[in-house]
Structures are given as structure tokens and as C-alpha cells.
Amino acid sequence: MYILWSKQEYDYKYILFIKPTLGELKQAYIYFCEKNKEYYNFDIFDDIKEKKLDSFSLYSHDCNFYYSNIEELNVNQPIYIFTFEEDEEAGYHNEIYFELSNNKKELIERATEYFITESKKTNKKPIKNKLTK
Image 1: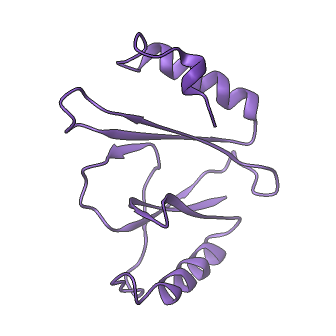
Image 2: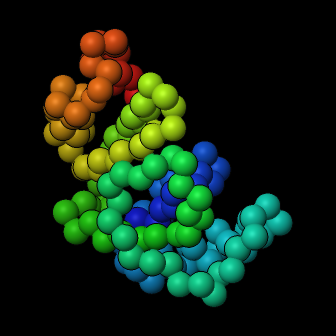
């Protein structure tokens, strides 16, 4: 399964498309660029780059598109996406993290574990309240 994503939000999304093949993903990318050419300055002839989707700074000025091949996900089953924004007290080290799974229960367990072990703000808000969507 292939994912097209960007460090910049487009239509309020970082993950733009999930397709079973790289060819279908590239076609969806070309269609997306054509459909949005009045709103964004795309060069659809630039190749999309392969890069692992895990986390990145929200202050990145990187507007490139990337694709990731995640073999363990099945595009024919529901795909659950956990996103988490970790913001520092000073407000200039914001990071966004992504986890994807076909198994909702497993994803919630990983998200809960993430809050317990990684979040710098676990004392400020109960974990149950963080898992709202």
C-alpha cells in the first residue's frame, strides 16, 4: 500500500491519498495537481520522493510531496490513522506524529503507550481525554 503525504497541509490533510499501487498513487497525485493548480503552484513533473512517514516539525517549510510504501497495511480494509501534535511550552518545537493500522484496538493501545512514555504533557490532561477521535 502506498501513501502520498506532505509536511504542508493541503485541504486540512497531511496524508492525501492511500492507494494499492505506486502507479495509482502517481495518477491520484497528477489529478490532485491538475484540480488544484489555481490554488497552489505545483510542478507536476517533479517526481515525488520516497520517505518514511513518521514525524516532522510543523515549522518545516518543506512543501514537497512524498510517498511511503507500508506493506503491512491492507488498502481493502479500514485504515485507522493516529495523529498527535506535541508542542513544547515555548511553542517553536511543534512536532506531528503519525501511526497507521488496520487494527483499531492495536492502534489505540499504541497511542495510549505513546502518551504514557513519550508525551511531555501526560500530567496536564488524562490520556482518555486525548483519545477523542
